[in-house]
Image 1: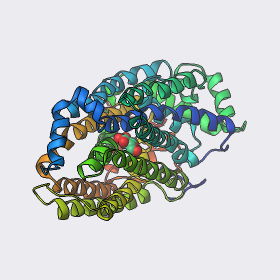
Image 2: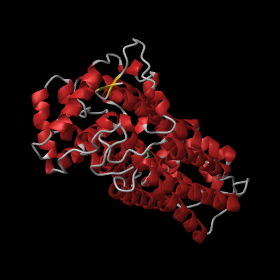
Image 3: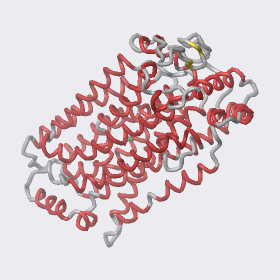
Image 4: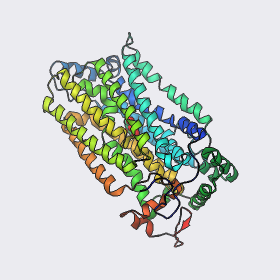
Amino acid sequence: MAGGAAVAPGGRRQDYPGGLTPFVFMACLVAATGGLIFGYDIGISGGVTSMDPFLVRFFPSVYLKQAAAADGGSQYCKFDSQLLTLFTSSLYVAALIASLLAASVTRRVLLGVGVGFANQSVPVYLSEMAPARMRGMLNNGFQLMITLGILLANLINYGADRIAGGWGWRLSLALAAVPAAVITVGSVFLPDTPNSLLERGRPEEARRMLRRVRGTDDVSAEFDDLVAAGEASRAVSRPWRDILRRKHRPQLVMAVAIPLFQQLTGINVIMFYAPVLFKTLGFGGSASLMSAVITGLVNLASTFVSVFTVDRVGRRALLLEGGAQMLAGQLAVGALIGAKFGWSGVATIPPGYAAAVVVVMCAYVAGFAWSWGPLAWLVPSEVMPLEVRPAGQSITVAVNMLMTFAVAQAFLPMLCRLKFVLFFFFAACVVVMTLFVAFFLPETKGVPIEDMAGVWKAHWYWKRFVDDGEDADGKGDVEMGIVV
Ligand code: BGC
C-alpha cells in the first residue's frame, strides 16, 4: 500500500498536514516511559530467582535440586517448582485485572494518562498523538522503553548479585519503584490527546491541542475526521458489547490473536528465564546473568531497526522477516540443546558450544525485537475505531498478560517434560503466526487512524464483515463518520 499523501482504499485522503513537532515528540517520549516499569518487572524476576541467597531463603528445595544437578543429575528439571513459577507469573495476573479496569477509566477520565494502567493507555495515547506517517516510529517508543527497562533490570541483577552479604536481590526488587515514579511524575505533565478532549465535550480545546501537536494551523481536515469519529463513538454506549458485533470482527480477531501470538513466540522464556536457562546449560551464576545482559542489549538495539523502518517498509514486511528469523533461531536452539543434552539432560557443555547457543538465541531475540515485540503493541492500538478503542486495547492487554502468565507458568515444567522439543513447539507456533500475517493482516502504515475502515474494506477476507452493514437496530452503521 502506498504511504505519504496517497489515497486510502476507502477513497479518503491518506495524510494530513503537519509534522513531528518538539511538543509531540516530548509528549510521546514521556508517555513511552510507561514501558519502563513493564520492562523492569519482566527483566528483574528471572535474575533474582537465579541468585543463590534468594533461592536459599525462599525456595530451598530448588536450591537443593540445583546442587544435585551439579553432581550429575538432569539439567532440564532443576528449576521445576510450582512456587517459583508462581513468583514470576503472579505479577501478570495482577496486571490482567488492572488492564480490564483501565478501559472505563481511560474512556471517561484521562485518555492516555492512566497511571498504573500503562500498557492499556500508552500505546493508544501514542497512536492518537502521532502524525499518521510517523505513527509506527512514535508508537515503537513504548517497546523501546520496555526493552530499556529489561536491560536495566539485567544490569542491576548482574551488579546486585556481586554485593557481599547476599542481600542484592532486595535491591533488585526495591528499585522497581524508580520506573514507577518516573511515569507517575511524567504523566502529571502529559497533555490530553485531541480525541480525548473531544470525547469529553471540549471541541475548542481539542482544536487548539491539534494545532499544537501538529505545529500548523491547517488542521481542519484532520479535525473534521476526529469530530466524525467522535460522533460515531458517542452513538455507541456500550463499547464492550459493540466490539462483539460482526462489523468489528476483524478488530476483535486482531485484539485477541496478536497478543496471543506475541507470547507464543516464546520470547519470555528468554526474558524471564534467561539466567535460569543459561544456568541450566551449565553456565556459572555470574556468567548466566552476564548472558542475560547480552540478550537484553541485542533486544534494545534491534528495536531501533523497527523504529526506523516500520513506517517505510511497513508492518507486514517486518513481521514476515522477523517470523522467518525467529523460526530459524528456535530450530537452531532446539537442535543445539538436543544434540548435547539428549533426553537425559545429563551433560556439561564446553564453553565454545555454550557461546554458539547464546549467538543463536541473540539472532532469535533480534528477530522478535523488530517484529512481534513492538508491532504487537502498535497494530492493535491503530486498527480500532474510536468507539471500541479502549475496550479493544483492554482485550489486547488482558490476552497478553494472560498468555504471559501462562508461558511463565508452563515453561519450567514443560522444559522438564518436553526437554529440547519445547523449542520446536515454539517454532511451530511461529510458523502459524507467520501464515496468519501473510493471509489476514492488512498493511496499515501511513493510514490515518480515523481512516482505518478502508483498510478492512479492501482486504480479500475481512471485507465481507465490514461490507454487510448489518446492524441490530436496522438503521445501518455509522462507521468512521460515513453512513454505510
Ligand atoms: C512483550 C513482553 C516481552 C518484551 C520483550 C514485549 O513487547 O509484551 O512480553 O518480554 O516485549 O522485549
